[in-house]
Image (cartoon, rainbow, N blue to C red; front, side, top):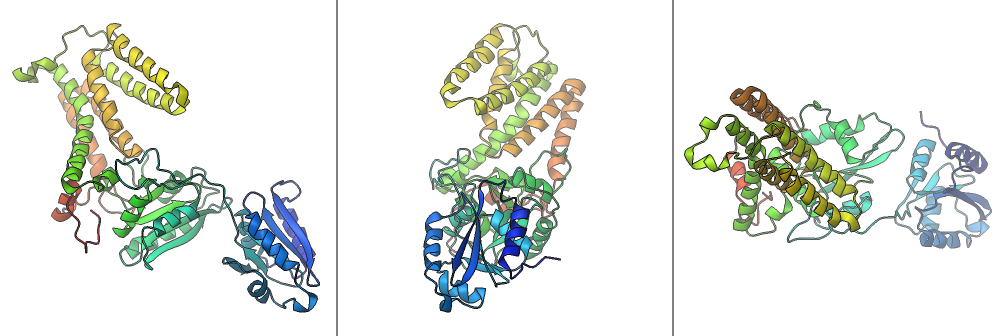
Length: 474
């Protein structure tokens, strides 16, 4: 049962000072004043407070005379707090959560309710274009770590009263703000109710890794299936487009990524550039992306299979055969390079900008020319792995790119061990991992291929001109 605050100011101060460790926390402060014949106290966190707004409120409080002091906190807030976001609360748990969220809470002697004044001013970076989700044409803004600004970026694009931004709280200790955003007339309300219940039922201390922590709590799918259940985007235009299509967008405070659900594999592969160009160009880019991703999964296992069975190579493909001496078995070459590419990726991420050029030169020399001339790798293997490395960066979703990578490595190992049957088994495992996967809504991961919907299936591959009354953006 929630404990109510007292009408005696000193008791409230003693309780809050003890609970919030006010003497130990340098940034958690309180200020007492005597106005209108009564004592008052305001709690706030230094760093979250809009000093200008609070200064003007304090100036107003000091002008209150004894005879003008209202009898109730509701009258006080109406008369002396000319600020848009003001509410009342009477239980300690809610008040403490509000203070730790950056809301200033005002206690007045004799009042059995606290006045919560939302004059927060969170530190934040600019809404510049995200590094990963860049586009050749289109808007250049992106989500930031402050949830209020992220919802505003979506509101700017969808000016409809049907757009709902529903606030929930997750984490027993962190009380992290989570917003589910949807268009009330287009969302699947049955799925929305299940999603809301899942979020409310989460039992965790905090969302340490923000969106990823929430994703793992929402849907605890088998760890051995690497294909992602969500589409993540740092672009407000992409999130707004998905909301208009009937999806639910989940925003987590302190995270610049929006979770879009439910998402099939075709939704995850799509990106904003598909729609920022005319239909012909957009269709070409989309088909190229599908082709490159499929080829990146198939090219190395197919080539390894042909090298192990040279009789299968037709005469017109004889040029793909290796002419040099093979010092290291081909399967080991492929696996070493798969790991080496990830090592270079990690090195590039952790290398200061001023050193990226020397790192690139060393990688090109050591893993390129010298690795071939030393006999560790064959030039054909380097060629195909270079294509795979480039193809991985054509995939806008990191999780899906790594899912393809894991399936490719499994197929390579099985092909090396069991030859043709291993190649077949590897592709069966890959197809099964996709076919038996489900979205968070329990639907097929391959919709609209299964269950088959011809109109929606063609839209996934062919970018068409959108009619003015089309409710979807695909």
